[in-house]
Length: 341
Ligand code: HSE
Image (cartoon, rainbow, N blue to C red):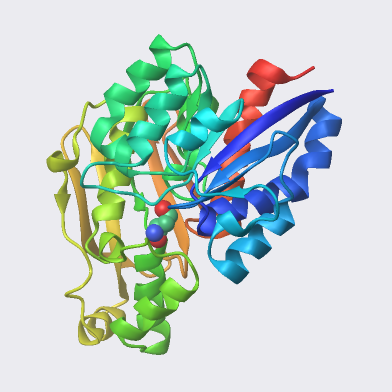
């Protein structure tokens, strides 16, 4: 039996979701692939817990929830943080779940590049470094001969990148149009169904742990624009940058506009369009009952291909365990490719 040693960077909603899904699935993974998942290091923004023997998933979550700091993990808590955590103990795969930073992509960019230099595979849910440094990261992974997977960065648990790359590789993808932000979809659908105010629904989505650390990224369309850049690069092969995306968020959408649209049989949704002619995130009117008519934190995407026509997917676009499940799926891809016994 081989140990697969995991380092988790970032221990907010997604990081804690990872601890939960590892706990839930490790027996299954052991049986299927002969690999024993072991979390050897976990870091929050300023502290960590590190043990080569492996950390207890439930204890990690309890310590973080009750004390706010992993430094309080019994015996193995420490004040080591950031890049230093990667030097502190041997690991095989970095699971990177720090908050998205669309200004300079840190700390995700440096953590990822350092892990690559150490010869480690990386799975991420982060969007900032992919949106700002896509080619740099892909080139570095290639140069260091490691695997870099980022399904969880777009659409939460909804399959989209792996779907296009691994399930539909016979096709050229011509465009992707969809709803790629769970928080704004939650806000807009609650405003439509309950008539709730914009401010209250935004607070609710923060309590649910689906909004970004800085929720402006959701409501101003920044999060969906990052995902547009990631899909453009990874699925359509367009070397797009964040600044190439036309972005408009939902903060100007009033309850009255929603009511008027509703009366005419329409909904207002934040739509992302990815094609070689248009990279855009903006609120649009969509028909009730169409594929865009989805509620709550769901995301959806219609992938238009040259050979297979249109393929539409939908799934939960944000959330702790759901996003972590997409990361575990990427980890299983790595296990199948490199570690299966
Ligand atoms: N804040 C994001 C959303 C999380 O609401 O979709 C998932 O990327």
